Length: 209
Image (cartoon, rainbow, N blue to C red; front, side, top):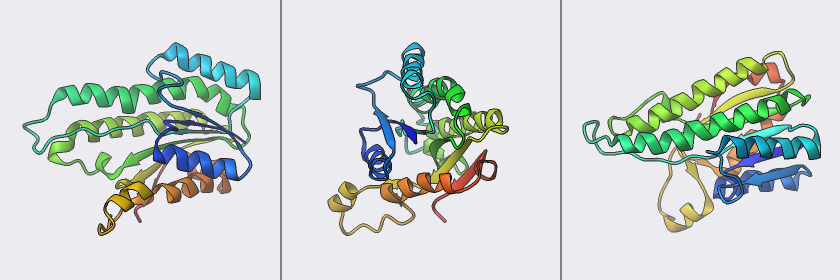
């Protein structure tokens, strides 16, 4: 399979990239140093290059993210919304619009975003983050509707927060209750290929349960 991972340089991207590479798949990992995902033309060029070389894409795992927030609703900084809109929403829009045609060419394509419980259960100080995550989910569900008559699916994986080995090493005494390890996330993404597209298309799969 041909898998594109955006936000590939971080611990989550490395975990997912490594998992698919170890299982014999071709992985194209990009980060902000490779492609500016806020530049729609650059993202379209990336899609054109992948189509020219491979003819299709079988997976897009969109991992670009970030968090900003305050302690109370009243001290919300709307500059945080501007930042989070670009990171969580605009990059998703550019990537999904560019790669939807390639996913349609796959017999078993998957488009995946990682969302957070906060999208459904916002906190007072996390309004900007929760709103951006909710917008990302809505956009992904629209993509799912576009893919409903194809062999591909768009799915939302929901976590409380992600955990990696460096975090565990820095706080060995911490329980990290409800967190999802990046290796478990990689397995969850791979598991989407074991289920029929129509079964997972347009769904929110809660990894905290």
